[in-house]
Image (cartoon, rainbow, N blue to C red; front, side):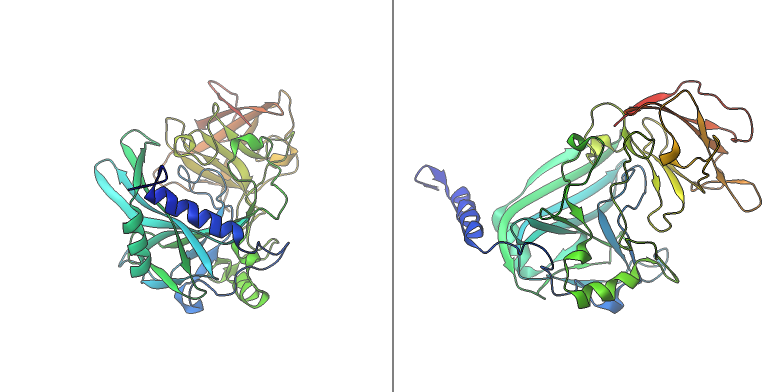
Length: 379
């Protein structure tokens, strides 16, 4: 059906946009959320911003994670209700199906919402939608696109766009019961200054914030002690973690092969992060997306001098080659990969403020090292 030359579905969407523009805006700063998304007893701990899990999360993540209690090797995570944190407009639901080889690895949904113009948030790994939200998705229909971050792997995104108003505390879906150990919670706030990445053009969002910075004090204060693994809370401020770690003119931060966009599925394997751990910021991390090989994460304790395990922010442009390895308490090399993985070292040379040479090799930094066939990364 067409109304004055505009398809009815588009006319309805335009009405929603006009109605949103007529609503009061966000306050100039401060809280916009009032209700915790889940019961406090529903999860074990929160993972701070900046998590690293290559290849899909090679660069620091822009969201926190709720992690449920239990041994998920024995049974799926418990199912818990997820609530609207305020009166919100749910503007999109994306069904995401991950197919590795010919097997479906995961199938759940991302829910995008906004409490007021300029502040946006989302829940990801939602395993079930409320009946009202399911009806909104069904009415809107969906459009699907496939992405292939690696040969043989398919990430299918099926998006439904609409405007569903949920009231504060309304159950909009559920998490748990699937393959994910919890669910994600991310937020952006245009009222904050943009993040100072070395090359902002690579990023589609420069206003990422900790979601709990958007909550009233009582909810925020109850959540901050939950960041960090059970029995080992994060105490280094900001407790909620950090996403942007670039330091211009040094090796620290995110690097890329070619002109890929940060965060795009096609760019996952072509990304490299030389950053600090989100649980223990005193620990350095080399997070490598694979770039045609195997992705890995290498953890180490930074040193303030020399060429082995040097603090990334202390590496400036020049001819020096630096070596990185994980070293255990007894001096043996360790790795975040399986124990059967061979010993690994990483070599880097910062050629200029925007160009870096990178190479992963077998062996230890305690023997002579030199670049052999490095890959060029840029900001």
